[in-house]
Length: 355
Image (tube, rainbow, N blue to C red; front, side, top):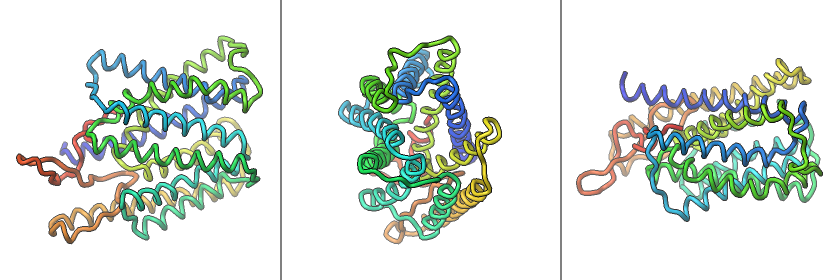
């Protein structure tokens, strides 16, 4: 198997793992929260991250991957930012209607595109923008039910959008610039993410639910579902860092909306949630938008590869990471230390990502 084919299959595998684990954890957590009466989502997330760190620590001790030093300030800032974004998303859900919360999640894609365009000088073609618009329209039709506004909820939503966008862009940027794998980055940052949620989680949950996580009655069934949720979360966190590192934050958000459509479908099939013609139409439009996004990204990747034979001064950069990615441009250093582009284009840290 060629290196290009191996990378292509690796990306497809990471996307499949991300979708499967995310849908599984949503179903597990829905049973835990709705059926078993354990509504402490932020505290549960801190346990997810602690179990993830412990699992990676064991894997490192077994020499399944090699840890790599990352500047302490970068790791702490990154970990705290990602932990904070999770807290703000939970607060946004608690202080807003479901419809407004879904709009908050939809807004992450255009905000990510805006931030990458302004600060990272990325260029997104009109075709890519159109496909993202179709995707967002479909998910909006399928999932948004009402738009009740309130000042506090709106502020929390804006903070959630900002921290989530910056955190996901940092995930991609740190892996590529510092040449660390997704596993190495997750291993270094998960303790800080877990710490901030472990401290803030009980207060956030009590604010949202008016109940204390410490006073909850933990039956064997509840404990079993909590353990199952934590184990699935290892795969979720693992695949999230892998997808963002090997593709892009925008592609990860597109994948996230595919998960939303799948969760709606599974909810109807397995949990008998209400399902209307509007949900079906929205899901079909969203799937069409995702297909357009993947098609245009593949097309632009091929076009960009063709342009590589031209002088660098004639080349233009575009967002070209498809949902089912082909190889993009990467770098290596020549003997004089100058950065040059590989023919296959994948940074070494991205090729070696395990998660």
